Length: 487
Image (cartoon, rainbow, N blue to C red; front, side, top):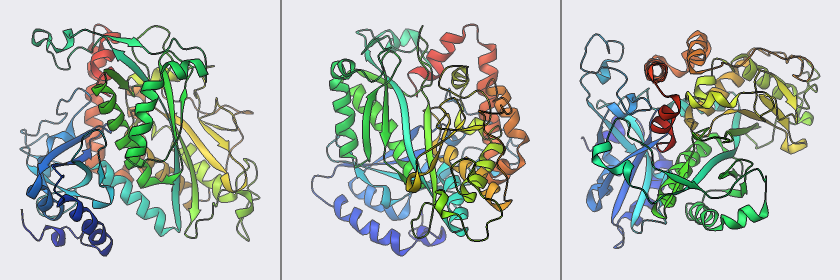
């Protein structure tokens, strides 16, 4: 790697230099031992290269090489595209024969891991060896959409409301017995922490105090803006809520939170899973509700009704939002089916969309309506849209990018908002991953904004996942092996 890689890749900025100076000082401290340079794969799972001492300091400027195939994996960790077949990757020549990519750390994301003394953690951005950006990097996709939105004079603010399950690992090591190894392997046996069906129960929360304490300590140690931890309705189900953040910061926080919680709880004998529906009887689905609002460059929430611009063509108060908010919402509605595979990317997630389950079944909106896909909540400065489509294992960069793509389409075309779902039900959501993939392949706007490399990989990885599910003899066992202990 060239020492001039920063200049070749056009990433040498004053902001980066300032952040790098702070990180370099920490890396030179005597108690520093290792640096994990991490990135998010297609499925939002963190992968990393672990570097020591001098190698870590050099990597901050020179980057670190890593094999490119993790960006091409499906949910079973199979490479979804045959990279050694020239014809199969003719439209992705940079991935032919599994070359290295360069992972350049973003010093703004540096944190120290409170559960691993002497260990730093930093997110990286992927580049090809010639310094060109890797267009198949999900974090790059969101950065590009954030830049588009900034050019329009806005920033997207996001609040995270994430449901998940935590189980105690049973005293059973059959899943680690080499005679039982498979691809993917069996999931471990687990026990519940609380029996469920007592929403917000104080007794259930107190019975789960050690797990909640570990999550709280981890979030505080990582400086994540966690505002509450709650007992959800289902057995062994919980919810974490975070304060509002800029979209890019929120996406990074989601990646770090999920990975950190799973690591810390595993060290204490627990399994945290962000899969939508763990494969057990009477389980309750977990969702990821993404709260969003737009602010102008002065920080003012432009969704609030009083933010109505002078001379606006519509009154814009049907949904309790400004005309800007209504147009943004209209764009989200138009592209909801096409972006569904980005918000609910697994076979498992589609079982959540059922009547009377606090989850959407149709594309529409409602004011403070938890059955709606888009729920309008908040008042005045807090006016916002809650997207209830996502599952908690979704890739946050692609999920949030899809919101900007749809919302900007609404703003650019001054789209009108149809009647509320309280009056008229709209188009049904996809019933399964196969239908969601077909809808994604028909949405030219979403695909053009994601770019052909990203779309090609999503198409291949999700087609592989769907085909393996259809071919499975036992759908519950497929869920256990494919998702439960892996996400």
